[in-house]
Image (tube, rainbow, N blue to C red; front, side):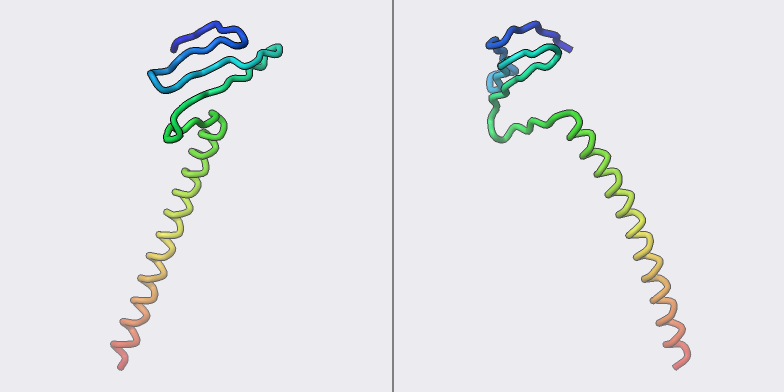
Length: 87
């Protein structure tokens, strides 16, 4: 990890395309501006972590849903087979 000390108005580059500028400091709060290509995703840590938690929850729900669907299809198939045997 690279740690930099910058003052308000100072900038630095990440690669050739991303410019980070310290806009303002106020106590322990730092306001920064990021100038990056539009196709470059910039996401705050708490949003990224929330997205990961949501994806995990969605995957769990999909697993439960798919299991229930599978069991329901098997039950329906078993019932249809029983009815066909009785004909």
